[in-house]
Image (cartoon, rainbow, N blue to C red):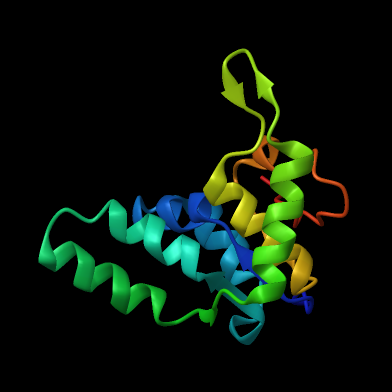
Length: 135
């Protein structure tokens, strides 16, 4: 039976799909397409990695199949709260990076599971619901 909870897809999963990763394809195929979303920060991260017009067009055509969430005041407020709480320097690096902070804020505000291959970037955030990935 397919999973019915709405799911926010992290950039790490989209990159894995572009690289033809079977685990990424399998987990996305297990979800109902109408329940799978990306946010504008993920779109921006993907576009930042497209170095040709052709690549950008391919990426945008692919990303168009996902529901898309846009930034709003609630997401911005949540992101600021997360930064205040989790942007702590550890060994010279912040615990929470800005793009991950925004993605986490979307997940929390929209009450969606987060589908990520970088669980360590999010699992310390109180209230985050990470989608289980079985291999």
